[in-house]
Amino acid sequence: MARLEYFLRETASGLRRNGIVAFAAMSTAFIALFLFGLSLLINREFNLVIENLTGNVEVAVYLTDPVNDQTVAHLTDSLQKLSAVGDVTYETKEQAYANFLRLFRGQPGYDQVDPKVIPASLRVKLNDTAQFSQVTAALGCSEDANGKLTCTEPGVANVADYRDLLGRLTSITRLLSLGVLALAAVMLISAVLLIANTLRMGMFSRRKEIGIMRLVGATNWRIRVPFMIEGLVESLVGAALAILALFVVKVTVIDPLRGKVKFFPFVQNTDLLAITPWIAIASVAIALVAGTIGMRRFLDV
Amino acid sequence: MSHPERPFPNLSKVCWMISLQHVTKVYKNSVVALEDVSVDVEKGEFVFVVGPSGSGKSTMIRLLMKEEEATKGEVYVAGKNLEKLTSWKVPYLRRNIGTVFQDYKLLIDKTVFENVGFALEVIGKPKHVIDQRVPEILEYVGLGDKLNSYPDELSGGEQQRVSIARACVNRPLVLLADEPTGNLDPNTSVDIMRLLDKVNRIGTTVVMATHDQAIVDAMRKRVVELDKGRVIRDQARGVYS
Image (cartoon, rainbow over all chains, first blue to last red; front, side, top):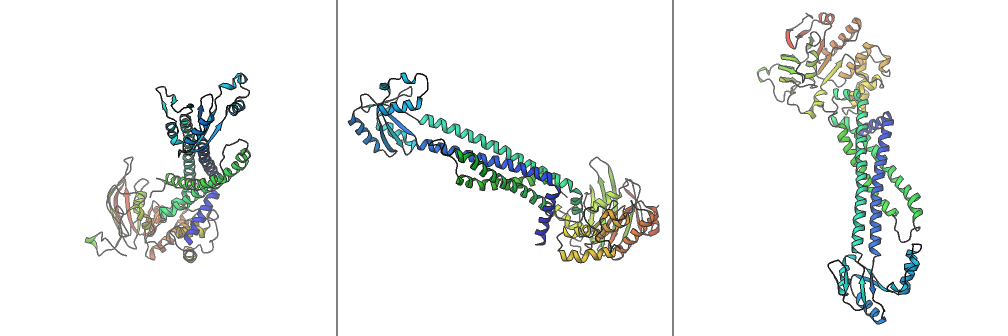
């Protein structure tokens, strides 16, 4: 008990004496952990978007003109049987043209497009995008040397392949989140160095005290632990502030956007909750590494 | 005292507190501070180490508390071979050694009581021990009425008394003093020497490095004289030169 009391008292007096420097370390820990948390959130956001996109992906099976109702019924039936397929809807030429107008309104020449060239299609929702080949196989489609699909099933003109696009999107988002994580890593390292430096300055300003402690036979741990706790307190306060700030960002920036963009997902409170343990772990790791670096070679007997 | 490893089997009847055997200390910049120094100090002895500046007095003190390590030869303190003492055991050695310096090394933001108590606190002694021993030792060094003063409210002599109290509060076997009267006027120095003598009389082995001739001559204790790192005289009841 006496020992615990001693450590706490020494830590408190160290923080007080070292006020401005401790504040600087806390601020850096806060910024680093905030950016770290932000990068984790951005990562989750990317994952949500990807999930959303792949979840909503439709395969368009374009039909040859003129469209025959029996062919539509037959194709719908055979596609529905596939395990990868969730839902099949028929989009008539009129609906397709209306969609076209909605998407491309305002672009030069959009009203000169002949409604007749816009094909009717079956919109196929996939449960599992990886099983896209099931669809092409059922329709008897094969890829030629140019990568163009031709299909043998009567009534089918073409199948739009989104795999390539999706693959590219995924790799771009993966790259982006890696970049954000790298930024966070740099920030974490700078937090480690700043806290290590704070501890060093603290020890420098108390070198006389430390000298006396060594003289009278205090163990290395007895000397180090208050500084370790000091670093831990600084980095934990930074972590708490970072979590608070992330919550504020979520409420003031992300929440107002929610619903403004249709079908676009945003991170939730649960996402925020899920990253807090990582921030806490990162802050403890910062303190430990900073303590090790800051006190190395400084106190050797 | 105990001799767990029996360092001097041929001298086992004598209880050496300190023994330097053919000790040479060469610093990194190849300055030879001590050269082939052999000195044995019995338990309870009072030894002056004298010599001009740079003769190696301070190096000898630093070797005895393992602040430095001997380049050659062996150093024994309180039955321990310091060369073989692992670094994590050094703090425990130092708990048996009190140290006093010319510059007192007191913490100016702590009271006299806190300064002395600090030495017990940082080696994990409980509060009730501190509350009992600190006033006791301060009474002993003649500062029983200055417990709550701060170092800058005290005279040089009083500050050195605080530092001696701090060195002795854990009842060390050995007291090492490096120029303890270096900053004090002759009368105050005499008072400090009386105190060190008193500490010695209760069984503490005292090694004091000094170049204060008057004091050495007045005390008539054992004198080890160093010159350029060599022992040129080791005399019982000696004078400065």
